[in-house]
Length: 160
Image (cartoon, rainbow, N blue to C red):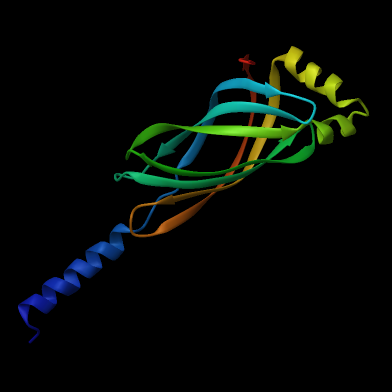
């Protein structure tokens, strides 16, 4: 017969390993979009990515690596690390800075960079697809969550 402490130890190990099954958080929508920078090279937006954590426990948000697709042009947009927690069974707004290359967007339409930037500025809206990975942790293990979200969003302008 196994000693009592060994049985308790094995039970503790089993309970810890069963707790590390992380359900994937879901991207709900882009909120609070603000145009915060426009120059001859880039256009910068601050957005809040609304996430839903379906787990009972809080999750630590570790990193976000996304590519943006705008008007059929694929652009590197986001590579951020975080040290923040998402409460369990709740929505959470993750602040994200999206930096887009105006040069690549302008080439598609055969227009100069500033004309493209001004067109986006004056329109006040964009169709944006974000795809890539979100890394979260429950304190025991990490989980890579695939992100693939498309949304038309209207942005406010907060240029200095």
